[in-house]
Length: 174
Image 1 (tube, rainbow, N blue to C red):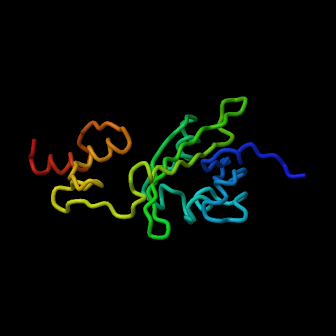
Image 2: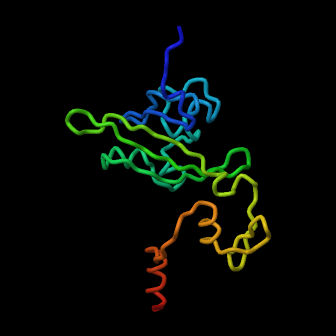
Image 3: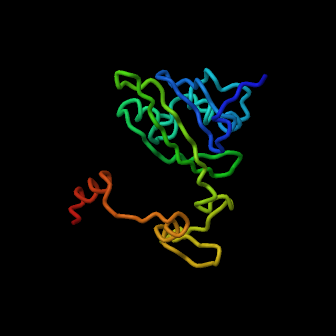
């Protein structure tokens, strides 16, 4: 008799990760990401992306699992990667499972492919190499912010990152 796994009824890829970053349980959607026969016992970054080291070392991006183990809180980040010359953008969300002492025993990791939502499933997106505006399907040139807002509903707030702020200070630009 086949064992019932409620995780297999979830369309998004879901895995349960232990403190050693090993997959201890996963649904079929997760297992089918890279057509692995067995993901149980693999490091999460290898099972999810075929990386040989954690996401923050492989892709210069946040490792949601490490964040949840460290903060004991849910965490969400965006991963960008390529599969068969196609851009893929995923929202990765982690939820810690705490033991009776309030320590993180495991982390549930969910992967939501937002590539289509962002309009990236079409392959290439036309972008002006000078002003960085993006050409939409109607041929209109839109700012990056407008394009993303129209495709996701996200709003932007602007600030200056630490690197640019340092450059501005070096050049005495205010």
